[in-house]
Structure formats: C-alpha cells, structure tokens
Length: 273
Image (cartoon, rainbow, N blue to C red; front, side, top):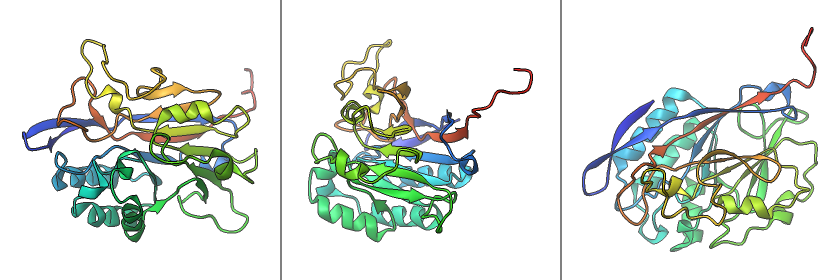
C-alpha cells in the first residue's frame, strides 16, 4: 500500500510503501509468534521533510498497530538544525507504542548528546551499545516471563560501536535482534554472536536507481542495499528509509516503512510429512 506525502520545498510528492515481511525462526519463543516490528529509519527531519510528512507516518503506525517501533538512525538531517516538531511527534509516538532507537551518522553532525537527551525526554529509549529485554507487549518483561533481546549498536561511520560490550552476558539461547544504522556492521559482528535478525537503514535503497543501476549504495557491501537479505549467518532487513538526504529527490527507490512479523518455525515434522 502506498500513499503520497509532500517532501521538501519543491513540493514534490514522494510515495511511501509499507511492506509486510515475515521472518521465521525455530529459536523464537512460541509466545512471540506474530510479534510485529515497525522499522522506522532515515526520516532526515530537516529542510526537506516537513511536519505533515511525519504526521502521516504516525498515521500509518496507528492504523497498523505494531507491537514495537525500532528506529535505526538518521532521524534528523543534521542534529544542529533539528526541527522543533520532531520531539513533539516522537513523544506522541512513544506514548502509544514502545519505541527504541539507535544513532545514525547524521545524529553526529551536531550536538549528539543533546539530540539523545531530547529523544529520551520524548519517551524514546535510545540504546547505545547496550541491550533491552522485551516482553510480548514490547516493553520490559515481568520476572520469569518470556523475553527476546534487542541489541542496539552505535553508528559504524561516526560513532564507536562496541559489539563485545553490547553482547556481554547475553545467553546464546536468547532470541536476539540487532539494531544498527549501517548494515556493513553485520560483517563485523563475528560468527559467534547469537544474532537471529538484524535491522538497519542508511542506504536509502541507493536513493536514486536508474534502470536497475544504483550509482551510490552508501555501503561497502553492495548486497546490503535494501530489503530482506542474507547476512553472515543471519537475515538482515535493510530499510530504504523515509526521507531524502543531500537533495530532495528519490528516484526508483521509494520511501518505506516496513512492518516485520516474527514467526515461530516449528522444529517438529508435521504428521505424514
């Protein structure tokens, strides 16, 4: 499903897709079968992205009611020019849905500590080289309740990702989702990390694609352009993101707000199978 949103001073209308994606795993606790994640990435709030656009994004979230929202960075074009509406609308989002975020490279183009403070004041849990345990409602689980882990890593380009620190003490039996801005970080996690799914952004799907040709991918690994791809032993979903950077133009790489549903894959053979 797509809808037209107005982007930037040129007044062009940018479509936004809301793909529904399923990821199945035998390691997923049964109670989390059907758990839905909204992947909100690369809004680039600033001169090209107006308040009305983000309001429409929030309408998509309200209609689809995911269990949790994960933001994978670049919520602002440059944090030194962060628009006033961002914190207000993030607060509206966080009051209705559990919301977690990691940092992208653009958050570092200005007062990153102030940006993090504002995000947290709005109710968004910014996870920097750490992890959170999530219950079935997307929030911290009660004692003894089933949980999955969300590991948040700092930006690969401008930050200081601490993979060992973020994973320290995390049991190998815990179903684990990694959130990081740049998908190239997948190749630096190491083969022994208990990763079941990685969520990223950064690439914009190339932002401009001409007849299948992508001049710029924003990544070292060109396989990590967009969509559900295979990483080093685990699946990645790389969002094309919601906004433009550099210029108010997207061509052949439409904006997207993906919804990812986790499914419990049975380890038992069906009768007669």
